[in-house]
Amino acid sequence: MTDQQIPSPSQAAPIVPDAPEKEPGESRWHAFVREVTQGSVLISVLAVLLSIIAGGILIAATDEDVQRAAGYFFARPLDTFRAIWDSVAGAYSALFQGAVYNFRRPGFAAGIRPLTETLTFATPLIAAGLGVALAFRVGLFNIGGRGQMLIAAAAAGWVGFALDLPFGIHLLAAVVAGIIAGGVWGGIAGLLKARTGAHEVITTIMLNFIAFYLVSFLLRTPVLQAPGSNNPKTPAMKETAVFPDLFGPGYNLHAGFLFVIVATVVVWYLLNRSNVGFQFRAVGENPHAARVAGINVPSVYVWAMVISGALIGLAGTAQALGTIKTGFGSGIDAGIGFDAITVALLGRSRPWGVFAAGILFGAFKAGGFSMQAAEGVPVDIVLVVQSLIVLFIAAPPLVRTIFRLRTPGASQRPSRRRKAVAR
Image 1 (cartoon, one colour):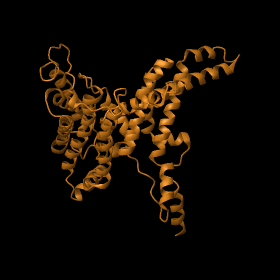
Image 2 (cartoon, rainbow, N blue to C red):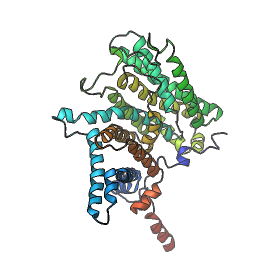
Image 3 (spheres, one colour):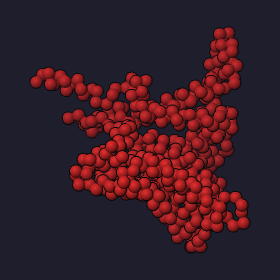
Image 4 (cartoon, helix red, strand yellow):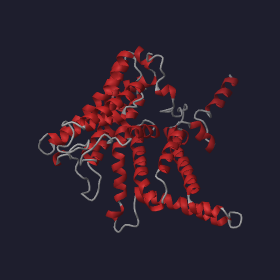
C-alpha cells in the first residue's frame, strides 16, 4: 500500500483543526478573539474541564462516605451533598498540593517542591510530545516513542557510565549520543516510508518491539549491565555525565528541563519561521500539492522522522541522565512514549501548546500519588481523566454541542447566502 492510498493524520483526524477564517475587513484583534472563542484553544480547555468534572463524578461514586450517605438520601439529602463535596474537593485539593504548592509544609522552599516535581515529570513528556507533534504536522503518526526512548537512553547511558571525559564535555557527549540514536531509530521508519511506502504506524510499532528486546538483551551483557550484578540494570551514571540539579539536592528537577525549553523554542522556529518548516507544513496539509510545487516529499518524510526521533530521544536522555541517573532497566520509558501522543493531541501539535500540555500531564502524575496517599483515591482516576481528555479532544463537535458553541465559519454562511440572493 502506497502513501497515496493511506490518509494522513490531518485527513484522518482533526489533529490540528483549522482556525476560523478571517473575514474581509475584520480587525486582527477581532480575528484573534474569534479564534480563541471558537477555535482549538477553547476546545482544549473545555475538554480538560469536562474530564475533570467526569473524574469528580467517579471520585464521588467510589467514595465510601458518599455511598453511606446516599443510603439515607431521602431522609437527610444534605449529608449526601456534603459528602460529595468533601470527597471531590479533598481529592482535587490533594492533587493541587501534590502538583503545585503544598500549604501544609513550612516555608516557601518546602511548599514549592511539588511544582518542581511536576516539572520533573513534565520534562520527558514535553520532549517526546514535541517529537510526536512535529510528525503530526508533517502528516505522520510516530507511534515509536517507546523504542526511540529506549535506544536513546541506551546510547546516552553507555556514554554516561563507560567513558571518562571532562566535566561538561562528558554531559554534552552523552546528550548528543542519545539525540542521534533516537534520530537514527526514527529515521529508519521515515526511510521505509519514503522508499517503500510502508506505513509509519506499522514500522514504528515493530521498531518498538525490536528496541525493547535489543535493550533487554544488552542489559544482560557487559555492554550495558553493571559489573558484578545479576540484575538487568546499568551502572550509575558518572558525576560528569548527569544533569545538574537546578535548585540543589533537595529537589529532583534537573537541567534537562532547560534543554526541553530550548527544544520547544527550536521546534517553534523550525515550524513557523524556517523554509524547512514551510515544507513540513505543506507536506502535512497536502503531500500531492507539495510534490507538484517541487517539494521532495520522500526527503521530507525522512527528515521529519529523524527530527521527531531525535526529540523523543531527548526524552530518553533526560530519563537516563537526570531522573534515573543511578542506573536504569528496560522500563525506563515508563509509558512516556505513548503519553506523548496524548500530550501532542492536547497541545494541538503546536510547540507551546505541547509545552503547556506536558506540564498539565506532569501535574497529573505528580499530584496523582499525593491524591492517593492523602485521600485514598485510586491513582487510576488520573488515568481515566487523561483518557477522557483524549476522547473529548478527538470529538470537537461533542464539546461544542455540550457547551452550545458555534461551529467555526457557521456565522459567515448565512451572510454569504444573503449576498448571493441579493445578487
